Length: 182
Length: 138
Image 1 (cartoon, each protein chain N blue to C red):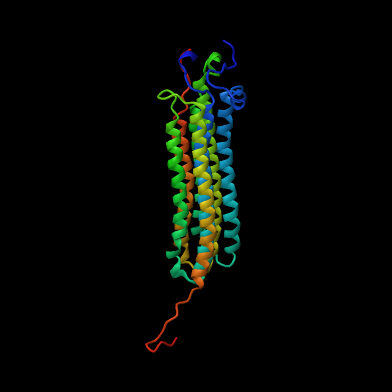
Image 2: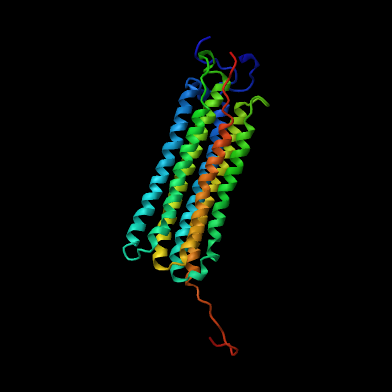
């Protein structure tokens, strides 16, 4: 049994290139993207919100404690990324080297990769969205304090996008089953 | 071991990538729509706070796009099951194209909702109702 795959099904140039890549490569990249890009989105959102909040609080110091909620919404996005990365890395199993390129382990590698991409990029756009809305929330709260709760409703719609990514990522990671028998 | 396997080994790559595209691009569209109209609502609400709750409609419309992407991604992801049904390259490419169709349509819809929502909400804030008295004079 060699370590390289022998294609059973139809082969195209894409397929012949893809079977040369170990499923563990795909899994590792997926896990890295899920946490790295989520934290990028959270950080981007926090600095957009934070700079507007601090600037607006010069003339209206009352807004500071309430508007920290926007920062917390952005932070939640990073926590989603951490949770999914931990779940994905528990899905990694060691298979014997004869089975590394078996169809089932290839599929498991692709599932973890796609799950990581989904979570990473959904959290990236969610963090950006919540950050920009949070900065508008701080600025309009500084002018008129009745607006805070109303703009917060919009932020809640934005933060639901990160949750969608987590849900699909976890559903897809259930597909990552490695072969157990030789 | 490989004699009991039928279907194509690398087809799940394209299938899962289709599910990723469906959710990823739809979420991008939803985020763009939410952000652009939300900023418009916030800046309009400073002048007319009583109109803010009516102006949240574009934000809700954009949020629904994320749900469309979620549904398609879950349907694709549960449809990739080589143990139940052989998964060929045909199925993989079909899932990839359906995911891209849903995702890119959601992205375009979200961008449209954002731009129109922003413009509409700021016009709505500037709109003044003209009252006529019983003689037809303003």
